[in-house]
Amino acid sequence: MENISLIQQISVALLPLVFAITLHEYAHGWAAKKLGDTTAEKSGRLTMNPINHIDPVGTVLVPGLLILTGYLSGGVGFIFGWAKPVPVDWSMLGNPKRDMAFVAVAGPVANLIMAILWAMVAKIAILLQSPFASDAMLFMGGIGISLNLIFMLLNLLPILPLDGGRILVSILPGPLAWKFSQSEPYGMFILIGLLATGILSSVLSYPLPALQQLVAAIAGL
Image (cartoon, rainbow, N blue to C red):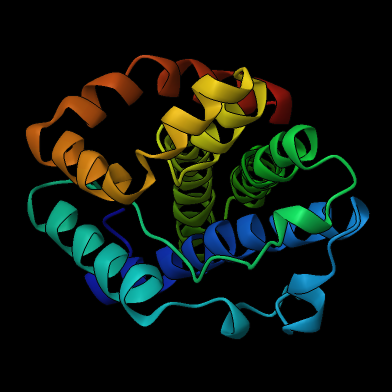
């Protein structure tokens, strides 16, 4: 986007980034409430106000540095981040083992919906044909699509405490679920290792382009 400066690119990219992360967490809290757990609501986390979900490091610093690094290397590279997890009391759910999967999958589903909405923003940018507005909106839409699909795929990895790990615990038989749950303290180390070695990028590089094409097709891009 030659018509947009580095500062403008980072500023434009932060909006879809913040909403990708915070609405993901809101979706978890919303699903938990529907299934009987009001912990998120009582703690003031059942809100779409990003301020209530932002983690200064995970939502701003780390993604911002990744955007900056990608820009300096010739393009936006792999971007990820996190928000403050929404509290969920699994014991308050009607059927804790089954409902765990529904609460977990709500976040990735929210990211998929947001990816489609950002694709529509990109479509509007193309139709506007305004030199500056079109460039800014198109860049924002493209970042919004990629970020949300990356967060969706990332969270669906079968690693605790990611959503995919919660879903796996929900569907595994009791003894296996308990054994797998013991891996949770090491989950973030595993994820960082996959990221540092490039394995994570390689794994996501297969489904990500297909999903990007699907979302673009839905929006008529």
